[in-house]
Amino acid sequence: MAFVHTQGVLLNKQYIPLELSYIDPTNYQYTFLIQSPISYSDAIQQYNNVFPQAIMSTKIGIPYTEVVSFLQDRFTILNKAPFLCKGNSFQPDVLKDAEIPYINVEKICNIPSIRRLEQQFPYIDKRCCPFHKRPGIDKCAHHVVRLWMEFNKSESTKN
Image (cartoon, helix red, strand yellow):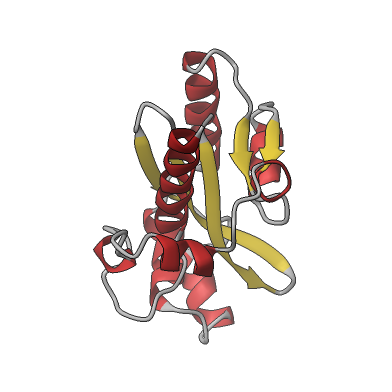
């Protein structure tokens, strides 16, 4: 099954997705910076306390419809197997928009918290994430899906 995870910011009680990471059992990985519905100039004027990388994604991101189209294509390639995601964030909304069934990883797979996964797999270094070279950026979507896939591999070798 494929894993999907998003990261974003909350602006005026509206969740703005900034990135979506995807990884599947074939080890095909992709991370999108998503174009925001808020323009770059509006973001600077209205949200001057937001991290610069959040504002920049509004300018350089990929349109949301293209992200949905990519997920639909991968769903077909993977023989229409449900995707895995956390059930309490933006991921289920993206998968619903793509008409892809999903399973909440926290309920069915008993995947530990991100912090526990980082302790279990310390060799997966979040600082090497190509999207977050700055220190102090925590739990990017790309890092999370890599941890989930590593956990999935370790569990499948136990059986």
